[in-house]
Length: 165
Image 1 (cartoon, rainbow, N blue to C red):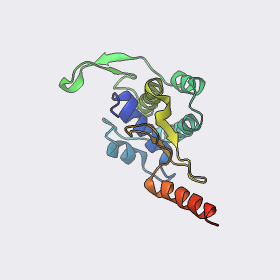
Image 2 (cartoon, helix red, strand yellow; image 1 turned 45 degrees about the vertical axis):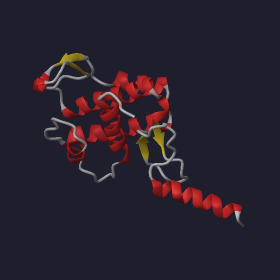
Image 3 (cartoon, rainbow, N blue to C red; image 1 turned 60 degrees about the vertical axis):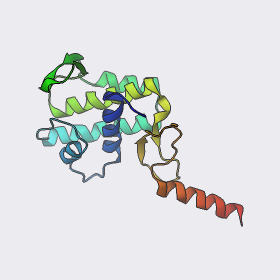
């Protein structure tokens, strides 16, 4: 499935942040995810992004209008149309000069909200008991239940074994 930039890449970055290990370098994570420009993340911004990640985690567990509206309300957002880098006009949800934590918060909140409005079933958490991985379902049919083939296989093998014993 193809999403617009906010519903797609922004929501994917939200999932990457939630899935990040506590020791993960968030600046590196954002660069590897294709978020530009990143700039340096200072200690305050790092702490705020980690706090924000916990808020995003709640949204993956309880994807409701109320939860997403709370995320949107927490961002310092003033949408505007940008034409940077010779690109066609497109929306930005925070000023390009805003601190990185504010930009990432607005980007991920609007990404999840946009995706939710397009297809709320695309925001998921792995169905395997004990797995906390979150994902954005980009499959054609939108019926993904597991974070990976590995988790899916584990569940299906366990179900098969329980039926045969």
